Image (cartoon, rainbow, N blue to C red; front, top):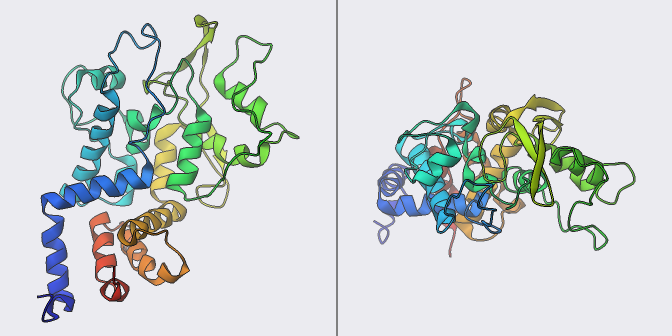
Length: 322
């Protein structure tokens, strides 16, 4: 079909795209696409105090966490023909490793997690970006603004501190310490951190090991000295360009699932994955076709598989020479 040009016929090319999306190769493609897009296979380290994590063996756990999201995207995108909103809100899991059951607080094999686990952002692979007793709303928020919203924050200035300063108060939350140290007027950090910290605050309902919580254990000299309620409220302009507020990971994920910025970011990831170079203005027409498919019609989003097909069926793809 390629030799005689038949592959360029719309019907034939669409049939071949559907055929390829049903193969094992498509599963590998989806894994690579979403790993590269959202960075869930990249871990700083998984080194925790054994008592803090209840003696859970972390050997090979990063791979288990990564595999869970691999299976999540394969199921939602390929098997269920899911939309962008679906990957942001689905509670599906295929995790069977007992250690994941500890993190997710499920005792038996289940394919559906609790409501606070809606979407991929609230899964262990996305939440364990900083080991230790305290979670990092900074790292969580930075991951969202860069990978989900495609905003380039850049490197911190040379004078920026590499860790949060020690404050005189003992009984304060990580959120308070983070805001006091990086968002206060006059600090060198406020320009950037005021944009993405609040995205991370929505996920303060999870500790550094990815477990759900309503209060944060406060540590001093590696010893717990008490606990304080967590605050998952947020207000941000980054999701839509206008100020939106909410509380918790579920609500933020729902807002991201219908965000023009987040969907446009995904089409950029898709184009970069296809061309193996960052998307630029020359790719706008092709990306707009995929974006239009994602938007869908009559208030119902289109599928991610459909967005992939729209890219393949575009005139730009047919003219592309690798």
